[in-house]
Each structure stands twice: as C-alpha cells, then as structure tokens.
Picture 1 (cartoon, rainbow, N blue to C red):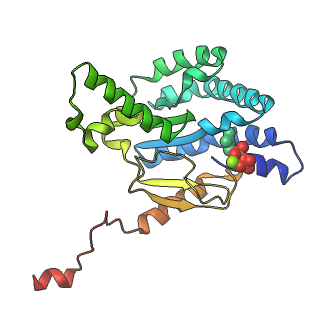
Picture 2 (picture 1 turned 90 degrees about the vertical axis):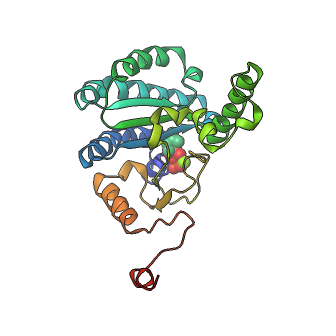
Length: 235
Ligand code: IPE
Ligand code: MG
C-alpha cells in the first residue's frame, strides 16, 4: 500500500493526511477480494524499515491501525474473515497490542478470506528467524541439519499457518515504485507482479479488478516450456 505520503504532498497536505485517506481504502479492497472469492489477501502496511520514520508519523500510524480494527471488527466477523498479523506485533506500543490481540482472537476461528496484515514485517527477518528456529530444533534433537529442504523450511515461516495459500500468486505494487522492498521474498518466488502508478489513497476496487485481469492474461510456466496443442499431436 504505497504512495500515501506522495498523495498528500501532491495536494499540499502533510504526509499524515495520506495515511488517513489510505486507511479508508482498505475496506473496499477487502470487500472486493472477499466477494470475488479470493482465498488470501495480504496488505503490506508497515515494514521493518519503516521504523526509521519520525515519531510523529509512527504515532499517527498506530492510532490509525487501532481505529481500523475497532471500526472493522464487526464486518470482519460477519463476513467470516480470518485476520492474521504477520510481523513483529510485539514491537508495537503496548496499548495497540492490547486492542489488537483480543480482536485477533475473536477472528481466529473464521474460515473465509485469509486476510493478512503485514505490520513491522520484513522478509529477510522472517527468513533468518526461520533459520534460527530450525537450528534450535536441531539442538533439541527434533531435526537433523540434513533434514532441511524447501518444504520443511516453509514450515518455519510465519505464513506457514496459511498452508497451501502461503505461495503468493500476484503481487500488486502501487505508487509507481518497481521494487519488492523486502515483501514475502520466499513466498513470491513464482509470483506475478503488477505495477501501477496509482497512489494507494486513490486505489479502488476497479484498479484491483484491472490488476486481476492482467494477472489472468499471464502465462505461468514455473520454468517449464509451454506445450502447444500441435506439438502434442506430433508426440
Ligand atoms: C505507504 O505510504 C504507507 C506506509 C508505509 C505506512 P508511504 O508512507 O510509503 O508513502 P510515500 O511512499 O512516502 O508516498
Ligand atoms: Mg513509500
């Protein structure tokens, strides 16, 4: 969800206005994903690198997050949406954790859309942490170093709870930036990417559907070659 600050600055407002407006864009996208039957949606709200921003910007972001949860809980419940946080929730101010944790518990049993909010999330951190969890399991004898393979490694990632949904199909980046910025690096190994110049505060379900349409036109080969019908006939 990129481009909040630039959206505000382009209008002569302070950056936080962009965050306020950006926060209101989440609900329509979650609703759209839910009504289209998408199985998992992850929104990258705050990265491990975003901690370097000013105290005043951070405090607005936490307030918005708290407000978002308070406003949306009923709808998330009613729509059977399962909300997970991926990232270091424990690094957030205590008051925010105390608001968010009970709400996450209330949604934990839901079975509909898997809605992940990446907060204080960094993929390198997630991956290096997975390595240390595995090393610990080797020390306690649960595993041997040579047990390691891709499938097992995946089990140590925070997205493991999503099971078959932990592999990302499509990554959408808003605001014209064309980089990955430490987002789900392992899980996106074979993801398709759609980049849009639209700033997140202007992002609508229509943009989202356009990205999905673009995705539907892609041919995913996973490193293999396409077999054409006429080639099949000659086999
Ligand atoms: C994305 O908007 C929201 C957060 C990272 C919290 P930015 O704040 O990154 O906006 P720009 O990139 O400065 O425009
Ligand atoms: Mg940005």
